Image (cartoon, rainbow, N blue to C red; front, side, top):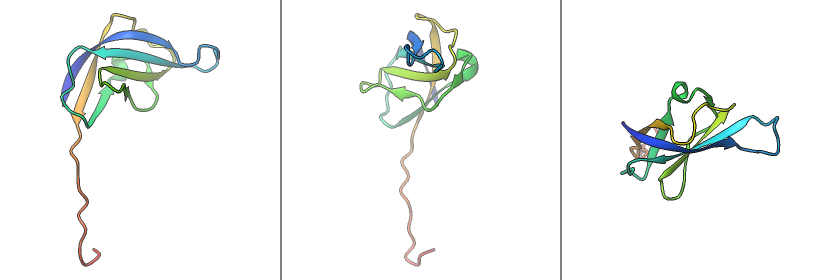
Length: 100
């Protein structure tokens, strides 16, 4: 597992027109390239001081990560956060000829 720094570029309500829907999106740009195509990414909820909702998402260029949170995180544009990156190991199912 490696840790990559990302700079926050946006922290906004997911649905601005509905104040009762308290889900926010933090977008952050990686400060160094990701070397793998199949990865799992995580962020420490204590660092962003918010509960994470669902998995983190990458854009098509793998340079921007979106973190959905319940409630607004105090992180601001320009802040640096740390993203934990782990390469997936592809596993191939093993089948027995005897139907184990």
